[in-house]
Length: 126
Image (cartoon, helix red, strand yellow):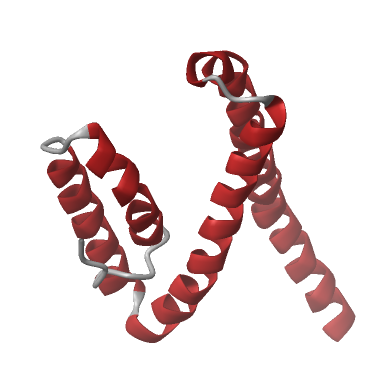
């Protein structure tokens, strides 16, 4: 009895979760290569070398990873409803405030935006 129950359960898991996991993997791959496609023209516009662009993209992903992991730990403790609402509110506030800035101030605020977008620090002030 246990063996048949295990088989039927695993079959349902495979049929329901595996397609979603494969789709998520494909979308993550497309997202990663989109940065490369953007870099083809953006590097020339910004006057960056390939090595500098690769370093910048790598730092973005590392920074996001460093702040996203603690954010997910807090999400488990606080709950998704509160945490996601807080993240959306902060993203909207940051986007709204970003439209009224000069370019030099905007460059200085990008690391703060990264921290906010990762969901970790709602208390980061200018």
